[in-house]
Amino acid sequence: MPRGPQLGALALVLVLLPLTFANNYFYEVAILVALNAIVCVGLNLLIGYAGQISLGHAGFYALGGYGSAIAAARWGWPVWASMPAAVLAVGVLAWLVGRPTLRLKGHTLAMATLGLGVIVSIVLTNEDRITGGPDGMAVPPLVLAGSTLRGEAVWYGIAAAALWIAVWLAGNLIDSPVGRALRALHGSEVAAETLGVDSARWKLVVFVISALFAASAGALTAHYAGFITPAKASFLHSVELVIMVVFGGMASVWGAVLGAVVLTVLPQALTVLKDYEMMVFGAVLVTTMVFFPRGIVPTLAGLASRR
Image (cartoon, rainbow, N blue to C red; front, side, top):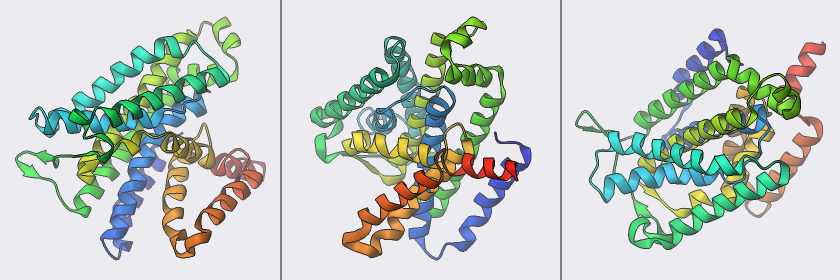
């Protein structure tokens, strides 16, 4: 779990990292890494700590972006109001959906969350008068205190600060009684309930929290890019997010961050291979899971502790 020195080290890395950037492309990749990491940190709370699978989290991500975009572009809301309103609305939706859905377990829960993601994707694609349909819609820029926030360096600062806050919040949650309740649920719901843990309540709480993380990242992504399409809610995007969490290591905040870093940067680095890009990418995933079955960070931490 993130501690004071670790959070300080993360802040230092985020501050010094731009010194290594040669041009705006590096800023763009770093911003994408930070925004993906925010989603993965929240998703890891659900999958890694509470043991509840979700294959529809890209739907919450897209709704955060579309909600803020629609409120700002169609209804004329200021962006500083549209973003928190969209994130709050996604949280309410997650609460409404989670109450019946989280009564399911295992593969049935996975299928239910998959269905949720598919529904969101279809609605965003078909409601073209509001969302722009499959072509997407333009998103107004972020305006704060009368100033329009533009430029890769400015947005890197926003994304980096948001990531640091996400890691800090997740760490505080994990170290709290709520975190202990979530780990108990992951171990055994029956045993946890025997000890007085309200499994239904805490599963719903962590589901909503993870949706809020995803919606926040989605809203930031939409206003950074200036455009959003229904592809953000696709099943493939949901699977990518889950792979990032598993790759880095479940039940590890730093694993979620590392998974987002590696699996966001790696496809960019492999573009030089052209036709062999996806083959090498798949080989890296398979090799990593063979030698790091619990994910990179937990496996390395286990090896270090044994030594």
